[in-house]
Amino acid sequence: MLRAINLSLSSICGADCIFCPADRGRRIKQKIMPFEYVEEIINELSSKEFKKHHNITIISTGENGDAFLNKDLIRILRLIKSKLPQIKIILATNFQNLTKDKAEIILNEKLVDKLSCNIDSFDKEIYYQIKKLNFYNAMGNLMNFLEARKRSNYCLPLAVNVVPYNDYIKAIHYNFEIKPIKIKKYVKTTETFPDIEFILKKIINPTDEINRLGIRGWTERGQVKKVNYKKYICKELNRIKNEAFIAPDGTWYACCWDSNNELVLGNVMEQSINKIFYSKRRKKFIQMLENKEFEKIGGPCKTVNCCQRLKKSDLETIWQIFLNFITKIKNILN
Image (cartoon, rainbow, N blue to C red; front, side):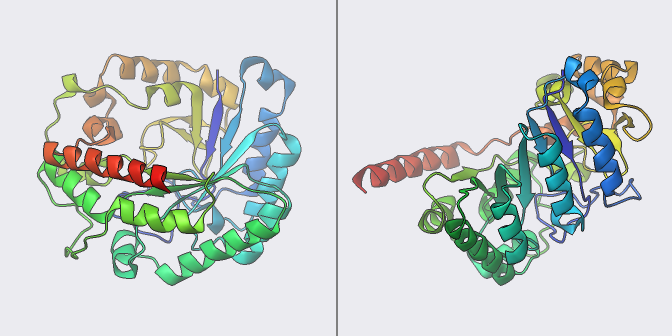
C-alpha cells in the first residue's frame, strides 16, 4: 500500500551543496514537471479505484530539486489542495526563490502543511562554502517569510535542517578516509551546531523544528570503491515499499538517494501508478533489496554504505553528548 508520493517538480537547483551529488537528474532530459503531468497524477490519486488499494497521507513537492524553479508551483499546490484536501503537503526550500509574494500566497491560502529547509551556517563565507548561494538573499527571504507568517492567521510549521561544515568534513574523513569531493579548499571555522541552533531559536517559533541531520556519503559515491555488502541493509526499504518517487518526466525511480534516477521502476505517464506498484519489476527490486543483492542491483545500491548515517569518532561522540547535556541544562535554567 502506498502512503506517500514524492514529486520532483524540478530536478534542478540553484544551490551546489557539499552534501548533494552533482549528478542529480542528469539522465532525465526533462528537468521541470509540467502541470499536465501533475494533474494526471493527482487525478489518479483522487480516484475511487486508487483509494481502494492505497492510503496516501503525504505528498512531498520538493523531491530532489528546488520546486520554486517550477513556474507552476503555486498552481500545482492549489490543485493538490482542491482535489486532495485531507492530504498533508510538504514543501522544501533553500529560501533562494521563496520570495515575499510567494510566501504570502502560500500562507494566506494555506497551501502547504509543513515547510522544510536547510540552514547550515550563519557565517556568510561558510554558508557560501556549503551551498554556493547568496547568504543575504536566503536570509532576507527567510525573515520575510517569518514576518509574513506572523501577520497571517496560519502558523505554518517550519522544520530547519542543519549540516554544519566541520561535521560533514570530519564524518567523511572518519568513515571513508577521503576528502569531500566538493571541498577544493578548506575554510577554517569554529562554528558548531549549538551556535547555529542558538541563533535559530531567537528567530523562529518554539514549536518549529531544528534538526541536526545525520550525515551520509551520498555525494562521495564516486570516491568509494570497496564495499563489504554483508555489513549493510537498505535503510530506505520501508520508504521504498510505501512511497513513490517521481521524476519530472514521470519516471518512478528507486528512492530519494537515487539522485540520477538510475533504478527505473516505470513511468507514470505510460502506466498507472497502481500498475507500477504491483508490477513484477518493482516486486523483484524490493526482493533483491531484502536479499541484500546490492552489487547486482547496481546504480546507487552499489555503494549502499553511502546511504547509511555515518558514524562519528569516539571522541567526537563523547563531546557531542557533553554539549547536548549543557544545552539541556541551559534550557532548564532559562
